[in-house]
Length: 438
Image (cartoon, rainbow, N blue to C red; front, side):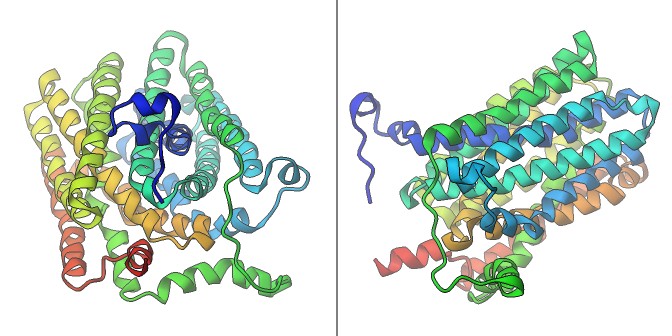
């Protein structure tokens, strides 16, 4: 099916028209709200804890909170199957969950802002875990909503818009927090950033309830219903050729990237960069570089196809870690920081389009929320576990230069596995198979 642009969209250049359709624009707004909770417990929290004098091992240990994102597939079946009484009947199942969890995320971020690490880490830990849980649950709904409103033809554009939104949300929320914290303190900063939970809710209410791909068959009750909701999506995925190798690839392809990304703010703090400098180079310049990367990623995806785009992005993301080894060796240099941040974000933008589109294409639309939650969670669980348990000790033992060289080497297994998959026909997706039968 080809989407025909009418009205004001018809006067736009052909290359821009797909980005102005309602579904990709909704994907942009959904991405904004998906990205901001991550920033609140990643770079923003790392900056706040480092400023409060918390040691590196404790700061990097907070990365373990991200494991809740990796285990979100455990409660994703609830989002797929459970209807919220009253509200679901009024606005639909997906939109009901979007509103409820979106407001819960707003409240959790505000609570994290009120917890002072100088007074004790206990409340900060609890609030961080709550933000992670709400953010992960928000991701489940947002990802399912996005995949279900996009047609197959819009998958590349929609994935790119989602990545635009994710980075805009995380960067703008992070920059807002840093600038407000400088003027009014961290509590006000987190409350201000919490408003980034709202774009997804607004987009969901405007675009309407997505059409669901309902599993045909008799209604199941009790344990049979639980078994069907939890195990049927996994069984469907594992029945495919090479499913286990695909899972291994997903587990290992982002180790180096995740390990490096969660330590950048520690490097900036130790090199003596100020909050305004971090806000400009890491947040604002990084956002521009990322958005350019997403645009280029869309071109790469269109010209090379999904498989070649994925391989290209894997190589670029591995090489980008070398730029931070260079920055660590150079020391406090605004030019060096700009180069490292610019290159890393540019490559991440290219990779984001290809990887998200690939994971989306792997999903059976009957089990959207559960399968995408499983795949996206698996994509970073190893890197986050290593970051939370050993990154601080590795930095102290190896130094920043050798640490970032190590993260580059850690990216190689994912590249090699994907090359093997390509050569053996194991990188195909259900969307490829559907198109082949048309």
